[in-house]
Amino acid sequence: MDLPPLTQSFVLHFGEMGSRWGFNRTVGQIYALLFLSAQPLNADDIVEQLGFSRSNVSMGLKELQGWNLIRLVHKPSDRRDHFATPDDLWVILRTLVEERKKREVDPTLSVVRELMMQAPASEAEKHAQGRMGELLGLIEMLVKWYDEVKRLENARITKLLSLGSKIVKVLEMKDRVIGRKPQALPAANEG
Amino acid sequence: MDLPPLTQSFVLHFGEMGSRWGFNRTVGQIYALLFLSAQPLNADDIVEQLGFSRSNVSMGLKELQGWNLIRLVHKPSDRRDHFATPDDLWVILRTLVEERKKREVDPTLSVVRELMMQAPASEAEKHAQGRMGELLGLIEMLVKWYDEVKRLENARITKLLSLGSKIVKVLEMKDRVIGRKPQALPAANEG
DNA sequence: CCATAATTTCAGTAATTACTGAAATTAGGG
DNA sequence: CCCTAATTTCAGTAATTACTGAAATTATGG
Image (cartoon, rainbow over all chains, first blue to last red; front, side, top):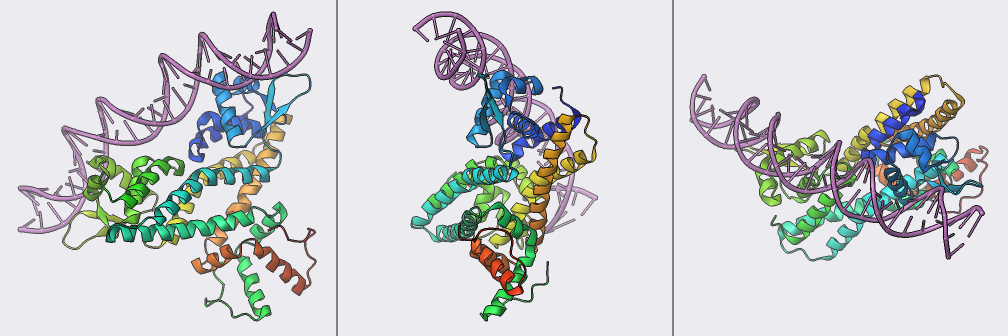
């Protein structure tokens, strides 16, 4: 590997973190390299810059395509496939969250839903199913929220993020103005 | 392994998912078992029910303690350590998010901050650093939001979650009432 | 359609991670 | 303190995952 220093540090870090994010070193480094690159790279560029075998790069690119994290780009008068990350970081973030949900949450959701349908065979199983029900309720609440929020435009999500916990104040004001009875909670002065 | 059917399916599923969630099969299964159990279990209970070696269970429990995901419990007139998951699912969720942030986000945050301090040595490096800056900005925004929201009580977070994207409507109402110029965005009718 | 460039597949191997059993350490009751 | 139960450590091994090079496949310009 012979990369300029900033690029190299970033690429190596992404390689190390790769496994914590659900893929391997190769995939992490390839993604980092594409992310930083000013123009799309082809597989041989990547081989040259990262020093992996051609076949390993091919598999890494396949995996990244499976995650929808890279775009295939064609350059005029060049048969080779070139790859790029989305320019827009929001697109990357949204894809990452969506794909991780698909891999880390959805399977559990369907398994637990299935198990909730079955009749418990004992007191212990009844208790276990109760626990699963609690878990299912929490996951479903989070997923429902996510499914709604992901439809919002970036600018709106940004606004919500920048409000942080102050959003609670806005809600209280709404309750006051509308005259609805506020929730039975102490004043919001923790954040 | 000789568990009642619902418990067994849940435990096996958590074992399979373990690796996607940042730990191994043993740890996943141990956690699932403790989560479903009506009372705290000691290491030998776990060995008996899951069929792993005593030492493997010991390491798994150590790892779960490192994640702050289990509590050590002492039963009267029993020297052995017993373990339990928090009864409150919110505690589990909060811990999980906090620990994953610590492992998956914080290291990147500090590396990228470091790299942003250095002078780029070329045009390519300048571009790369620009990309890192975008990434840093997005991560910092998310982390700042998370650091505020995590301080809210469960009931308030639940309320925000259940509002979903309707929160945007509330914000617009606030802007109208206060008379502040609303953001330059089309009407919020996507969600 | 042919020649060849580009890419993918896959069997074999390397590297890493998970797991075990035996030995060592820790800790509690007497 | 000592004896023993409980737990942890760790070296060795098993299992899994990552990676390579060669061969096969796919695709394109001529």
